[in-house]
Length: 238
Length: 122
Image 1 (spheres, rainbow over the protein chains, first blue to last red):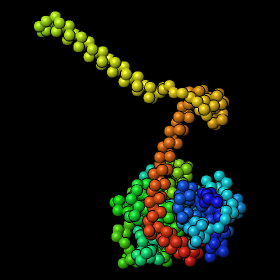
Image 2 (cartoon, helix red, strand yellow):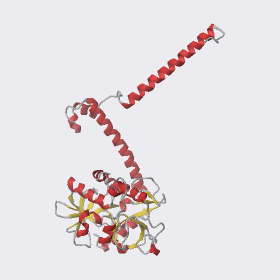
Image 3 (tube, chains in turn red, brown):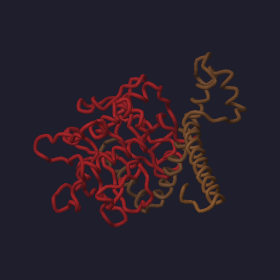
Image 4 (cartoon, chains in turn red, brown):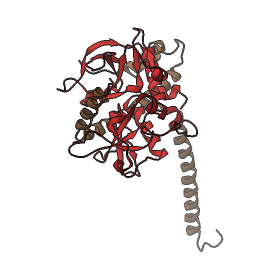
């Protein structure tokens, strides 16, 4: 069965509260790639994730702040199982709107770009900054841009990352150019990981250490394509 | 005209000027008609599903009494939007195909997937 956006699949997880995964990447992506964007569906949510969570008709919660990219069936390392439910149009709209807010799209694409605030002492990964993360890939640590808001990163102990690459040459909104056209952001790979997987010490930081505001706007536009959030952005007035 | 040495030459010059003026007039008229035509009116054969939609606008989500002109205008705009979207989607698919060959992509996804599981994100 094809992987379809808006369906909930069984999800093999270490967390007993996680019961499934809502497929959220667009269906062109889902039909062509070996991994898909997934919003975990849980029995309960923490207070800090309530603003970015949607209660479904089943009573479960779609937690957009925990968005991940997971290997898709029939990949041998997939954690996704069979389809368990299909969201109603209204449920999907509410999930899209919550993800849109989580990814700061109204702030970035609205009139007069604003930057998410920094809270307290910075002991967490910052939105818009570039970090290396564990584990090394093919012998080297990769660079990732933090796209989750700072209050989330501070409260949840996790952050959502987007990898940068210089391998993709073809121009596409799904892989926006950033860092002065030196790299592209892989928006479809957005994954939330614990802060402990992110190397935050100054000596471990790559150069450049941060993106520009224009880079983050480009990444937001990338999400509109990869996660099919154009309608949500329109609903948000941007 | 008075500087022309012979009647024949004068006649030729008159003819030339007349032709030039005619060309200019024709050009202006043609330009105007082309612009109007592209912007608002063209004559094209209407067949198949489109002809059916003109007879039954309600089948494409328009009110039953929608005029043929409005139905055709709507169908044309939807068609153009679809063609443009197709072009964008082809470009997007081409980018996905190139990205799928990024040697780090799959390894990165799998590594972060396991980091998320180990960190109880999911």
